[in-house]
Image 1 (cartoon, rainbow, N blue to C red):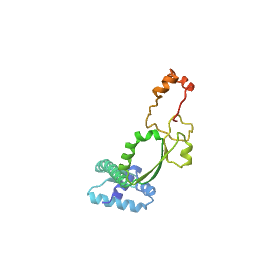
Image 2 (image 1 turned 90 degrees about the horizontal axis):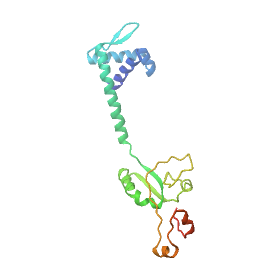
Image 3 (image 1 turned 135 degrees about the vertical axis):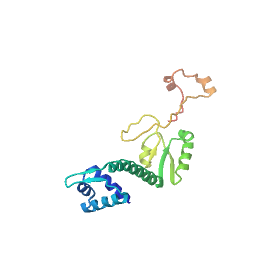
Image 4 (image 1 turned 180 degrees about the vertical axis):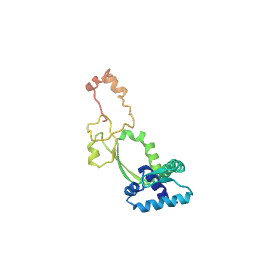
Length: 192
């Protein structure tokens, strides 16, 4: 018994005739009839009631079809899983990172490398903008803030906290700002 013959049997049932199954599978009708006959002999039971004008399942044929559908579904699933597991992910990914994200992403990148040892990560420093992404030909780039290019696919991966700091001597000399607006009146070194 061949798996192709089992699939042929299910196709005959689904399409309702040997001729329709033969046409769908681009096989000679006689080939379909012969293979179904061989399957019936192998099983030792008749699967179809045949007349010159109709074809219908016997009770045993119907039960066999129901069970076979489950088996073929499991077989397809097992084949798919086996072929997916045999595919080895490999290649090079050009990744642009913002300096302030290194500490947060380092454990994730190490875990990625452990899981996909055949993938080479080409990590580059970028500024906070997409010009670097296009100029350096990056596959993935991290960006902080709003997106302006609607053609870019983006996913939020982390939130970074920002803070305003000052030395005690600066605060004694210039005073502490009470609001964000007051920062424009102070000497600031901004990291963007």
